[in-house]
Image (cartoon, rainbow, N blue to C red):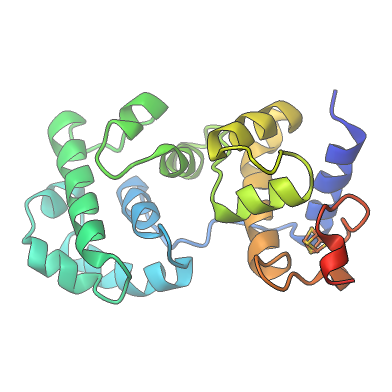
Length: 211
Ligand code: SF4
């Protein structure tokens, strides 16, 4: 049964962000997989600026797999770490092309076997591309879970994910993931969270900083 505090958080998130959704622009699973790998340590808005040009030149996994690495770097040069990211998306595309017949896989094990794809990216791909209930823990979800005492301060991202999976009903995982990201992005910022308009003051570990 869902705990009262968890229910309060889910209800509050529903009120704040009823339409939370993935903000990485994509038209298919290949584009989603590339965009999510590129989104590491940068904003979705920055990724959305480079992906239209990238996908025009490299429209599918086969094209990206055999693409000129300097041309790939050129397309994503406005992102930080673009050398490594170019290598990562090309390695991932080669794996998709050579081992999965140009189809982005739909299981955790297959996804994390691809270069550049960690558990967080795999969870995003599973939920966004295939509608498979998943809970990706990024920097926002990690921070919010700890502030709202859904996880402990020293928990690893894997432990946070496991705790969220136990506390939140499976049919809510995808929606809650998006809502927690919106909450972290637009209200409970890492620095200077807007506590005065937060519905979770009574639960939060860090409320006093700003009230
Ligand atoms: S009270 Fe402040 S720090 Fe706590 S969850 Fe709300 S916005 Fe975040």
